[in-house]
Length: 281
Ligand SMILES: CCCCC/C=C/C(=O)SCCNC(=O)CCNC(=O)[C@H](O)C(C)(C)COP(=O)(O)OP(=O)(O)OC[C@H]1O[C@@H](n2cnc3c(N)ncnc32)[C@H](O)[C@@H]1OP(=O)(O)O
Ligand SMILES: NC(=O)C1=CN([C@@H]2O[C@H](COP(=O)(O)OP(=O)(O)OC[C@H]3O[C@@H](n4cnc5c(N)ncnc54)[C@H](OP(=O)(O)O)[C@@H]3O)[C@@H](O)[C@H]2O)C=CC1
Image 1 (cartoon, rainbow, N blue to C red):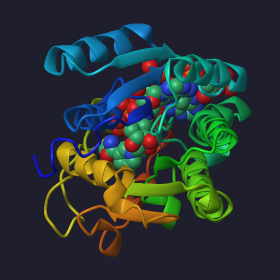
Image 2: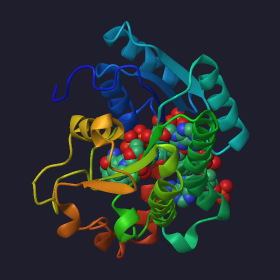
Image 3: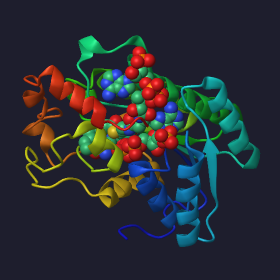
Image 4: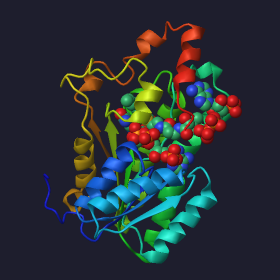
C-alpha cells in the first residue's frame, strides 16, 4: 500500500454506486486506509454482497448500505438523513452513473432522462444535500466526482453522458469558489479506460485493448483508488476545483472516443446488435 494506513482514519465516506466496479474498488481502498463507508445503489442484493465482502476483509470498519435511486431527490434526502442520524459524512464520492452507446438522433426523451437523471441530477442532489448539511453545521467536507474524458473532449455516441459529466465539471469548478470559504473542497477525476464488467458491456463492443493509449495498457483499479484516496485526504488540502486526468496519455493520442470512428459507419443492424448486447441495468 502506497499510503500510511491511517490516511483516512475517522473519515466517513459515502460512495454512490459503491456496490460495483470502480465505486467498489474505491470503497475498498478507503476502508483499508481507515475510513468508514456508506454505499448506495438501486439493487439491495448487489450492495449486500459488496458489504459482506468488505466486512470479511475489514471486520473492524463500519459499512452501511442504502438502497437509493439517486434520480429521486426525496430518496437522496432520506438517505442523507439516515447517514447523518448516525454521524455526519465527511466525504461524498459522486460515482454512480448511467451510460450506453446510441445514435443521438434516435434517443427517446426517456433515454436522455435516464442518463442525465442519474449522472447529472443525481450527483447534484447528493452534492447539494451534503453541502447544505456541512455548511449548516459549520463542518468541512470533500466532494469527489468521477467524470470521463468526454467531459473534456465531447463524446460522440455517448452524448447525454458527455453533457452530464461536463456539467459535473462545471459544478466542481463553481462550487470550489462558492463553498471554499466554508472549508469544502470539490475535486474530480477523469478516468480513461479502467475495465469494469458494466462499462465494457455497455461501451466497448470491440473489447478493451489499449490501442490509442501511449502507456500501452488500461488503468488498474488500484491506481484510480489511490488517486481518489489522495484527493479526498488532507494531503490534497490545498486542491479544489481541479480535475485530474488518469488515462495513460490517451487524450493526447486516440482521444476520448477514438472508437467512434468505426461507429460512424455502423449499419442499423450493427446498432441493433449493440443495443441487444447492452445490459438492462
Ligand atoms: C470501458 C470504457 C469505459 C468508458 C467510459 C465509461 C463511462 C460510464 O459511464 S460506465 C457506467 C455505466 N453504468 C451504467 O450505465 C449503469 C446504470 N445503467 C442503467 O441502469 C441502464 O443502462 C439505463 C441507463 C438504461 C437506466 O436503466 P432504467 O432506469 O431501468 O431505464 P430503462 O431500461 O427503463 O430505459 C430508459 C429509456 O432508455 C432507453 N434505452 C435504454 N438502453 C438504451 C440503449 N442502449 N440505446 C438506446 N436507448 C436505450 C429505453 O428504451 C428507455 O426509453 P423508452 O423506450 O423511450 O422508454
Ligand atoms: N470503467 C471505466 O473505464 C470508466 C468509468 N467511468 C466512471 O466511473 C464510474 C463507475 O463506472 P463503472 O464502475 O465502470 O460502472 P458501474 O456500472 O459498475 O457503476 C455504476 C454504479 O452506479 C449505480 N447506479 C446506477 N444508476 C444509479 C441510480 N440511478 N441511483 C443509484 N445508483 C445508481 C449502479 O448500481 P445499481 O445498478 O444497483 O443502481 C452501479 O453500482 C462512473 O461514473 C463512470 O462514468 C469513467 C470513465 C471510465
